Length: 333
Image (cartoon, rainbow, N blue to C red; front, side, top):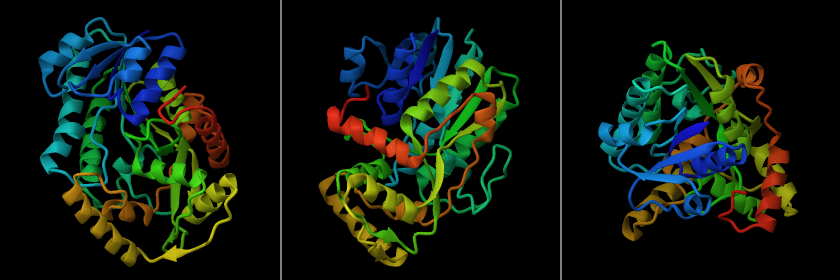
């Protein structure tokens, strides 16, 4: 298939492009000027520069494509301007899907995240679950929810359209563009100990990134139009996750704890320093809010419809460790 991909230079997008190529598909990546395209160029990807907010750019780039994967968006726990998040996470979705709906594409796949419908509480979130908590932890969280509302409208419009909502993904990859959570997991595999936030009983869904991209491609192959799919991994408590990371690293956990209120103080200081250095902070108040909440999701629908088969957190960590051991950090092969 000829595949049109937005967000191809991001952490997840890079893995998606690599997997599409490995499966024999052709890939056209829609990229902004100034993006790091070194890997995409090396792989022979058809690169088209443009602005996803401009209909004319998207329409021209999408000509002749069979599948559209829209994964572009602003994912950050550090607040920028609210307008920037809204443009990236809502308006570009409208532009890409509206253009695709007027084209001859066979399937449109919108790639969001589980945050769009959470936090979840202790009961696993399913595709038909209502949004359970009206708190928004940052602009990213809020605009992902607004994007979900737009996506729901497209699901009911009779289009060849599906939406996927991955859990919190992790894996090897370019460390310059990895999610903050992946930074902590990668550092943990390499032997760094982190304190347990609060009592550590909060549950988070952690999924190996290669499982996610295979699920995304399966959604294009056999996802039922008008449907949404959760692509999760293992629902695991934060304490158990840290213990598993420590075990994989061979570095015994120290079981240090930090209260949520104290963690927010440190995050506030880290954000303040970031404004001085113009470097994104590792700790943000939004991240603390996310990690102190419940994110429990149910991927049974994807397992049934898409033959989705995610590995356990331990197995995903072992795969990540081996890749980090034998390849440079910017390799996704």
